[in-house]
Each structure stands twice: as structure tokens, then as C-alpha cells.
Length: 79
Image (tube, rainbow, N blue to C red; front, side, top):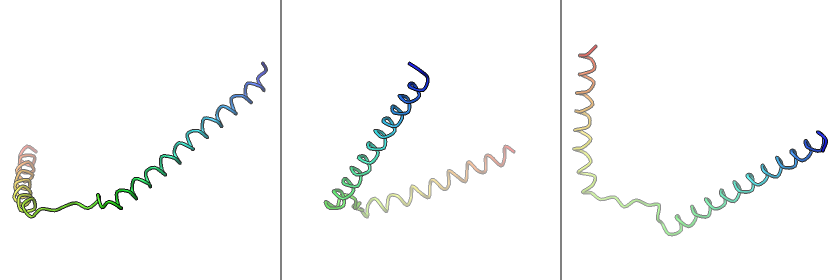
């Protein structure tokens, strides 16, 4: 087998491999689009918001801010 024949075979193998990957990516994209349409059709993408969850989230955010302030103060004191 000559070098020219080996290069020809390697080129064919490369094109076939890249083609297989490209086809798989197209199939995957189409599947994702289909799942998106199904989710929107059944309205599964809408989050149900609870007022209880919203009122509980506010104090947690305030305590997070106080923790962040304490960490920042400790870092400034260390410098």
C-alpha cells in the first residue's frame, strides 16, 4: 500500500467520521426543538409562584446581605 492510497483512505475515513458527527448534531438539535415544542404545548415551562415562598425569601436575602457585610468587614480588618 502506497502513501497516496493511505492518504486517500484516511481522507475518506475523516470525511465519514465528520459526516457522522454532523448528522448526529442535526438530529440532536431537532430533538431539542421537538422537546421545546412539547413542553410549551403542555405549559410545563410556567413556574407556579407561591406567596408564602416569596415572603420567606425576603428575610433570607436580608440575612445573606448581613453575612456578606460581615465577611467584607473581616477582610478589610485583616488587610
